[in-house]
Length: 105
Image (cartoon, rainbow, N blue to C red; front, top):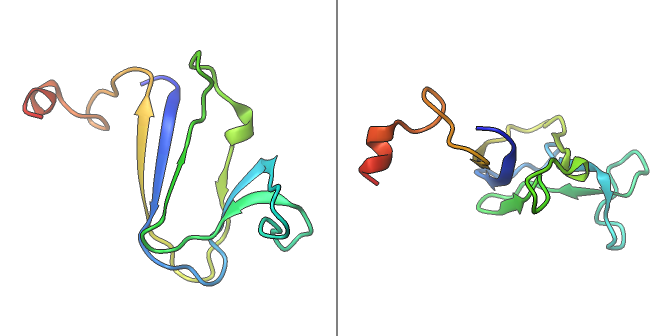
């Protein structure tokens, strides 16, 4: 499928302890919302059921943007997400949709 152009994370449950999605190369410009516990002011997202996070890990030319590297921090509570990617090219089976399925959409 090539480079990922868009990523959508949907948080399926509340996570009270841990489980943040952390962007280690992006600074959170808001007050203290991005403090990760280690004193760093990095952009983090606290999982909350029903919330969605959409980001674009490539520039407009389709080149990887290293600022969007992210990680799921360890969850003390259980964490469930649904993730959807949009790639530069079609992703073939078994991970992408078959031609027949695409024709029936």
